[in-house]
Length: 135
Image 1 (spheres, rainbow, N blue to C red):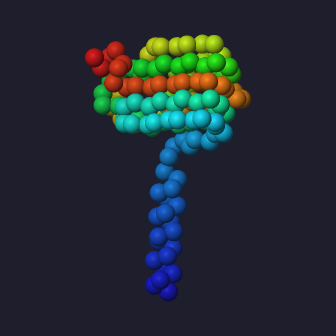
Image 2: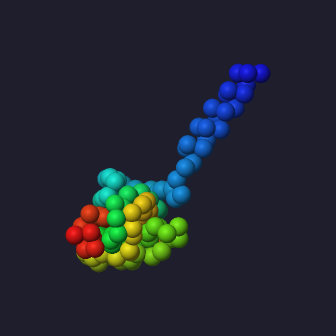
């Protein structure tokens, strides 16, 4: 009986740790490289279809610096700082963007890239350190 109780507690702990994220990534990709550090993230790909979620840590108030380029397809980029998913920007085939937006304060910031079908030859970069309000 004692072993069964320990097993049940271990199973519950394992399941709760596996599902702690507010958002989850789900995608099909070819030649996909990505990185997620505490204050910056990027993704480069030949082909990408789906959702990629980055979890960043903001050290203070400021904006999210971002750049994006896409050869074909389209994507919507969102962020969540206040507990609500808000649109940050959109990008379509042929666009190149280098800007900032999405006011944040100290805490966890989720950046969510969602494609509208397959996108080709893309690059996305997000950086909390280069935002104008923090310099």
